[in-house]
Image (cartoon, rainbow, N blue to C red; front, side, top):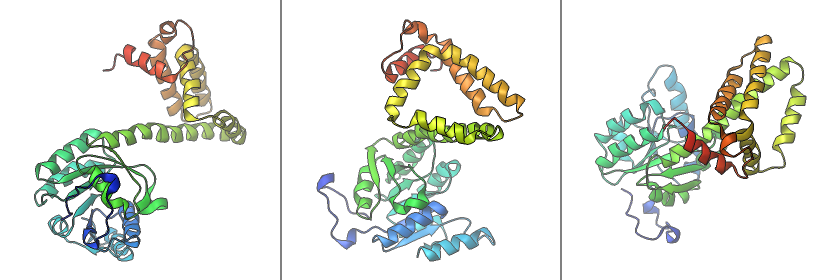
Length: 315
């Protein structure tokens, strides 16, 4: 078991090797593999893993190769893994997160730490936390904020939950990049979900934009034009420029997006993102924010967010 940490967070230094935890992974896919390799290199002496596919005649081959490469011990059941380890990472899939936690709870021992790395919703993380905490475990909602392979165990993580502060203290000594957010499970995952709206949305917008411009033979010119708009400003400056003006000009931009959709249809190209943009702009136009701001462009994007919150019918 991990020793109880009683010193203030900033003053704690782990010097005694007896505090080095034994790590366990439920699921041993790409993320678990790269994190394990890094942890072994930075001082973790024992890592175990249980993967339900480890003995599969085809899929199991890759899993076992990863375990051997990372010098990870293969456990044959969840019960054995829990018994062997102090800190247990769940790195499977969001759709199995709650089910696995319920299975784990049958053999979980008080004081152990359970870190859910899955990209699950805040509500799922709260349910998982309740299961783990009911049996005396410390729960950590870990939101992985970048692709794991380039970073390995040093991939940036935002953490929340009853065990989050202790997890940050314990694992930073092994090179992990952990930022404590809150003692409330679900907060860090919410931050990841919100960021994903932009990152996945931006990628999808870029793909649709470049597909159309490539078809017309102007993709390099479009990239240069977008680069000119995006460069030289911080994200907050862009938000203040784009969101505030959209609040006033949403209706006109809906009309423009109608033409964009028509253009893509004529080219027989996918217009999924263009249609979504039109729908979003229409929802802003329906709020009549132009009247709310008396026709004047607000000075800060947060003013628009307040107005949207006040006028939104979706609560």
